[in-house]
Length: 238
Image 1 (cartoon, rainbow, N blue to C red):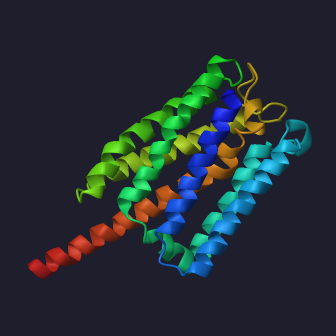
Image 2 (cartoon, rainbow, N blue to C red):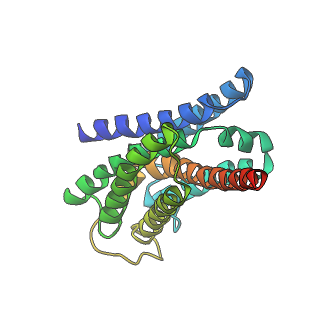
């Protein structure tokens, strides 16, 4: 039952990410359909591979399966960001409040804490990833609400944004260093991150984390543009 709840939560978070990023895009219907189809195909691929055991330590060798999937999606997303101006401009068209609001779903980091308590994830990865996501998700609530009513505080959002990026990078790093049967494993006690190689938990590093990092990058760029615009307005007023 717990796995079913986790699957529903991860699928909902992924659907929200794709829905908001594509929904606010000024792209035409054809490009939106293409983006939705690509996201669905990637999600389906991850689920099929995970169901067949393709991410298990015995299959992927010295490099953890979740890290391979995470890296592949990162290359696809940020490669598109730097090489395709239409992709970048579509993301930058999403309002700040919506981008920040997407991170509220990270309150689901409570799943990491439950898995750790159940002995299915090891410290420090489980507690760090869990509490980090919960804190970032909770803080996102008032920031998104304030931004939605026009009260955008760039300095505060940038601090929160940096915290969110740090949390994700730390989680990926600790996850890699806790992966079983890898030569670079540092945290050797307990099951490590074995649970993250199975459904539905593989969906987090292979589907959600890269998109959250992309959203963080988009927020940073939008805030820089906002600061630039305010400087221009100040000069004109002067």
